[in-house]
Amino acid sequence: MGRTARRTQTDEAAVTAAAQAALAAEHAAVYGYGVVGGRLGDERSREVEEAYAAHRSRRNALERLLRDRGDSPVAAAAAYDLPFAVADQRDAVRLAAELESRVAGAYADLVQAAEGETRRTAAEALRDAAVRAARWSGEVVAFPGLGERDAAVMAPGSEGR
Image 1 (spheres, rainbow, N blue to C red):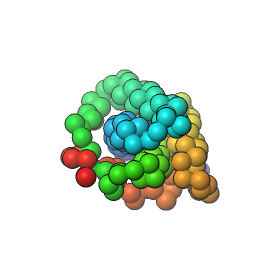
Image 2: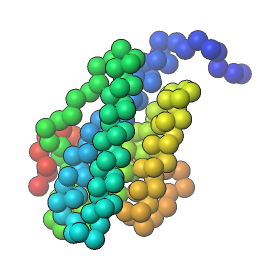
Image 3: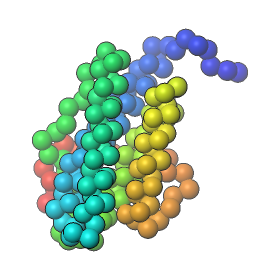
């Protein structure tokens, strides 16, 4: 049975909720990469800068998408609780991998909810986050984003030091 051309209010609400969750994950990633960059040395600064720029770009695109849909994008928090203390370079690398895994999970939900160009863009973002997660962690996940569905995005608050 195929999908009808007309989307229901429930379908639209699911797309909005998934886009807002992806935006929240991007806000947290932008914040988190500030922490990562502060702990890593110059040898990985290019990777940090590229990831930071990618997340800012995706964040901005999601804000535009939501505004175009007539929704108010969720705002970034002033600070976020980190999932663990980041005391050294090893912790920073682990945080970068965690950020990417969480972003991948949020985009997996958007891929499931959306259609057309929004779905394609979400799939590209999922792929990009999965590749960065693999680079940071050294591990490849068979179905990136699916295991992260239950993981919460970093909660707004303090840095969790």
